[in-house]
Length: 268
Image 1: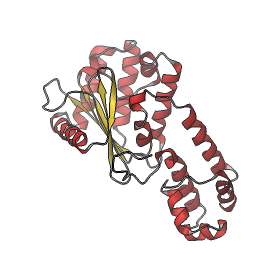
Image 2: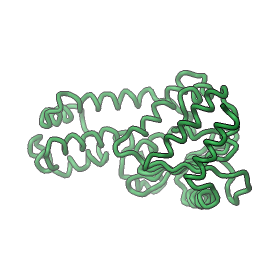
Image 3: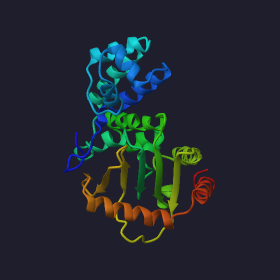
């Protein structure tokens, strides 16, 4: 799948999870690409393409590699699970390309005006917002990116009103905000709160995914759905808006202090 009009994207995002696991198991077996290539009778470049998710390798090839790496069927299982997972994921039409970019992103930058950033939502918070079970399960599957090794870098700014807007119940809000504090202490996650103010060029929620080849994809909320784009002019406006937000928002430490204050004074 190409994510821009010039077809510069070299990576197939549907295979990125498999590619990461493939490389991890090869390295754990103590083999370099050339050594593995000799064992399974392919060119070293083919192993490289698989590990960079640039080719859709066959299942029979995966079986051969699994045996060469003494993976006991686990690599084949990863391949099967990935394909099954992709068959079941359902998203709004405007959002359909973005999760594929999201899952392989090296960096995710987001701004939320109304709700907690989707990948940071607790089960209770998300379930209240998504009463349809398929929608809820899709949200939960997306959150698996937080467990990726290595994980992407997250930089998320949320409007201050998000902390005060009751979703479901005070208990749910307390658990959600406690979880934000917990997440913000991770090395790869930066969470900032933007105080109530007017920010020039900032009009709606958005997320920008930066891919391994440094290309970017942005999804923005609209009144009726949203829009995924790789147009340079859209990316320029969005990244400029994010720079403004980061500059004006509270620091990560100040944001944690504010979240704690809201928990204590409003939700408990």
